[in-house]
Each structure stands twice: as C-alpha cells, then as structure tokens.
View 1 (tube, one colour):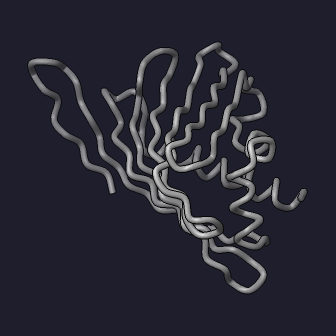
View 2 (cartoon, one colour):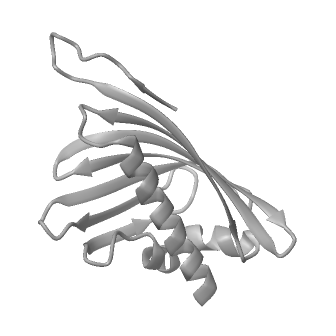
Length: 162
C-alpha cells in the first residue's frame, strides 16, 4: 500500500508512505535464521549491496537499544548508508527495528521493520513487514522492496552455506 502526501507549497517537501510484506520460507531453523541477524560476522556476509558495490563498514550491536550501521558505495561513487536502532528482540521469534537511509549526506527515508519467525517443521517462515516514509521523492517504494528481497535472497544463500 502506498500513499502520497501532496507537496507543501511553502517548502516543496514531500513524503510518500508505503507498507510491504515479504513472506519467505528458509531451509533452516528459527535459531539459525535469528543467529544470521544477531551475529556481526555472519550478518556482514549477507547484508550487503549488489556485487559491484563496495562496502566500507559494518557495525552491529544486536540488543534492544543497540545500533547497526552499514555504508556502501555504488559504482558511480554515490554512497548509501543504513542506520538502525533495535526496538524489540525476542530470540528466535521477532526483531523490530527503526532505521533511516541516506544517499550521500541526504536522508531519503525513515522506516519501521518487523521480522517474525515461525517454525514450520525443519524450516522457518519469515514474515517481514516494513512501513516506510520516503522523503522528498529521493527513493521509491518499489526500489526498497526489491532491495529488501535481494537481501533476503542473500540471507537464504548464507543459510545454505552454513
């Protein structure tokens, strides 16, 4: 679902709200999926941009109130930064975070991400709900959803390697 708030004539600033849900099953236990989010070295392997992008750093303090930061550079030199705060963590069950994205030094969005994990036999059903506020037309809902799906595909590959 996407809604667009009309541009303010006084400021020329806009916000576009969007919500999407990704429901994906992984061939791993909830503990394995949760650990892929919780362990810094593991998450740094799969929480990355496209192959031709360059990651410059990744830090993860995985606890309620903890922070995560990662920045990458596209081949054209534009930097993208992700800065998150963990709001709620229930081991093997739920992760809730808020995060903002920057392109170069400009904030382009603020988001709420909820990840739920459900055991289904030897597998885990992950349901990710993301609620976004895209600022001033600098990012688009379809791009964010596509990028998030790519990250979850990276997670699936990491779980297969483990």
